[in-house]
Length: 129
Image 1 (tube, rainbow, N blue to C red):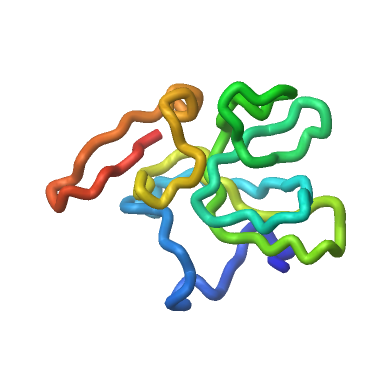
Image 2: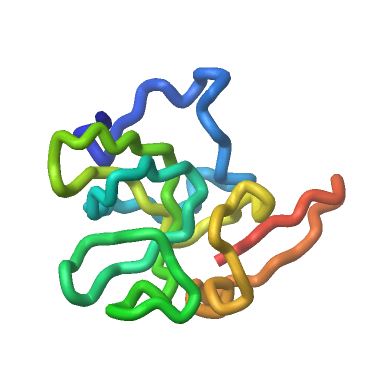
């Protein structure tokens, strides 16, 4: 379990999913407290902030209690080991991300994030917000 929302020294592991497409130094990262829901959170998951609990959860288009409003994207996978009711991770609140690596992204989430999508010269879709 990643207890420190600022440091992850395993960024160069082969199984570490790369979400940020470019300009890593311009990405805006912040710690997020996730509600443990019995399932792991996967890197690239679009997150929303639950207005009742105050914790982040997976974005759901049309979801109640704030879950229908995308707020950020999870930077790294977080395993739910059933040890606590909340988990700590890092959210990307602005940046340039590989759109194909995002989970739960839809037109409403793009609007909520104030994002735009473009195709890079290599044909890869980038989401910038």
